[in-house]
Length: 150
Image (spheres, rainbow, N blue to C red):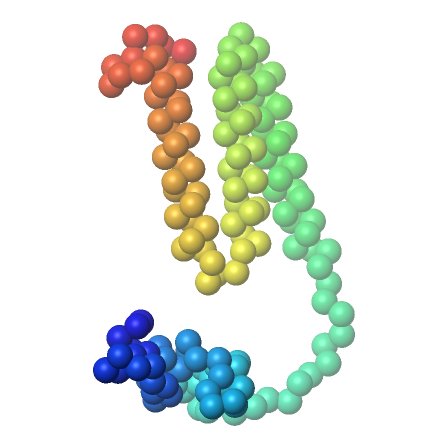
């Protein structure tokens, strides 16, 4: 970055370079912000003809919201059903409930994020999952072959 913005020890503004243009906000008293899109992003816009905006009225969100609510209700009902079927082993039911709720919460939190942010979000999620796995191994009794079976 510094090699692009400096030449022979002095700063330069090569506005033809994509990286330099993205980093420069003002040049010789002229405001250059916001930066223009790179040419590859603007290439598809020129090819598409503009269509007239159609007034379709309000969007009905009842059906998708009802579908999502039904899926979540069925999932939670199955957890309760497993609790009824497995009354002798409450530890299994507790772990299954925690896992199921974590899956639902994780899905809902990732689904609401813009696609451009999925990679950073997933890298953080994977790091947390790794720490959780190490914690699980320590709870099992440590070592590669735990001496207890929960």
